Length: 256
Image (tube, rainbow, N blue to C red; front, side):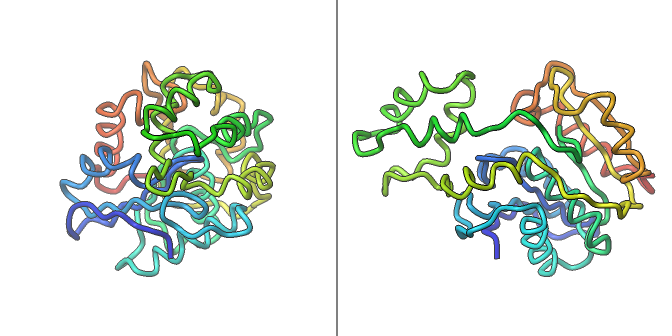
């Protein structure tokens, strides 16, 4: 079972399940989850090979979807499912393959397509930090910063650093080996017939106009919205706008 962090209490509204992206964790979503939990229970999970969840030898989207399905089995009724990036692909996989578990789907800045760009450079950066020389988190930040092209990502990655044991809470070896699968997407042809919202960053290039013709037959009830001033990390860059969009969509009756 994946490690879970719960927010709010059970109400008449479906539970909202949040699946983070690559190198993320349930902790990364704590602020967003709390803001979304005013009227519903919210569960954020650590995906396999991340955070406090178990390290497994594979990291395919069917694997990740099966992990989410196991969490869904502990919840009363189908969930509203929100996934960002890698978590968005896992969420789409679950929605298409086990539709009875998902009430509504929210996909944050990712499309059901393979991507040519890899996130291996950030994995390499973390592997190159000599943790035996690190006495405090600031030491790790100083070593990691020159290796990362976006300064805003350094504190994000450091949230996965266990200072007590001086190790990453990321299964870097497996994630490196499975990177082609992470950048890819399963060949699925089972449309998710329930409501779906695709939220993108206006400045991101992860969901392009040409992707809509791929999304449309797989998610025939899809709706799209873009956040101004946001890139791929839209929930961190524009958190209030992100929460407003999600709450507004979930609070609408009979979304379709």
